[in-house]
Length: 65
Image 1 (spheres, rainbow, N blue to C red):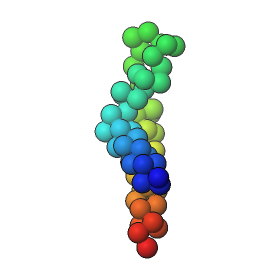
Image 2: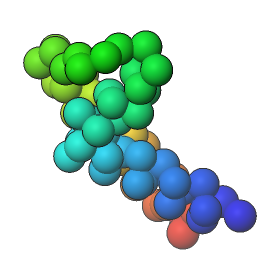
Image 3: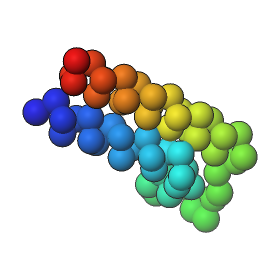
Image 4: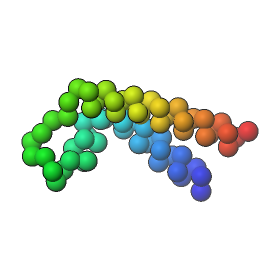
């Protein structure tokens, strides 16, 4: 069961890293009309994605050993 959670977190981290604009649209679909994310938002999402992927890799190493 832990592996499903790790896979979900890995996919979320990859989306945060490579598609932060899509996540912004999903997050603000009902509150903003034709808005665009700022460069700061995109940068923070990418940094968060790297952190999430790093934590996910640490969990995988912990579960293996």
